[in-house]
Image 1 (cartoon, rainbow, N blue to C red):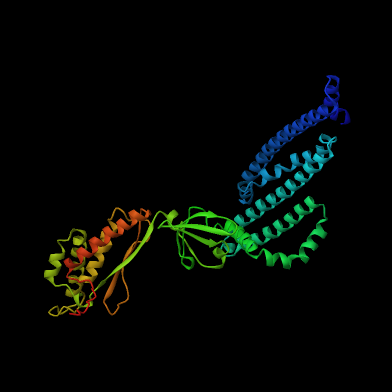
Image 2 (image 1 turned 90 degrees about the vertical axis):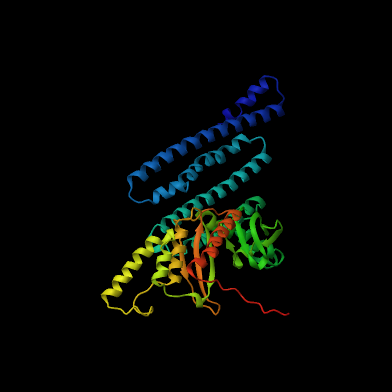
Length: 412
């Protein structure tokens, strides 16, 4: 190895280069050759491991090995061999440059620590994903357990990195840091809280840039435009900026609308209050009149026949409407609204859609529309709601119903 290490150096000296220039060019040539070898070995190792793991995954019945591949564990493991080669031959490359050799060796050791943490993370994520496929673990907080392991792993990794950089032994460094922890916690309290919160927000995927969140405590309602160690910036719909402490995302409750944005529907939940005094049983004349309403003509026809057949079979005295089975204008109106929503082009039919009667109030009985618009954009969403309730308000009178309106006493 010694002859190879100085071959280029000797060749350059023979060509008339100075000693210093020959040393630098020799070092750069060896470094380039080492990097090329490491790159080739890394590529070959990745291909071999990928083919091997893919073959094993196809032959086995369990999906755990498929999850390992999807979490890039074989790919991360493949980096170990070229890294070992680099660490092994760096002393030969920088034999004439002790200062550079020290820096590069420390850098490679730090990379080795980070690679180890990456491999551990890939494995733990694979375990997490696999356990979530098992019915008995679906309701267990697997994410929390994995986070605890990773936090300890990162703490040990950071200690090891600082130990490498400072030259202090790992145990001594950890002990010194432990004795100073009280002062560190006091001085860097907000930073530490923000750091921990940032990790949890990232790992749990609680908030992303671009998410629409509502945080009533801080008066925030808009899109997240920035997330950093200390703060989260939200641009509200009125274009003002609200700044929220990062740790507030894990200590307080807020609403993230991402689920709604990804679902393809935005909820409509609004009601009108019908005067109780206007609710009545339908007479034959009312039924004939309501049959002219196209959306419910078939329904009225079918239901009236069923009710008439039932009352006839039971010998019900229909001289009084309350006897036997009857249709009401309120029930028919509810059916009309349900049919209207079912046929509305801007309503998502694959999500919950219902028109329901709520608990009576002193003002009347609320009739609520619960549905989801197919367009989640705010402007279009408001237009859809307006379109729906314009129709609702205009159609009430056709069913002999009235909407409650608060009467304000005149002061004149």
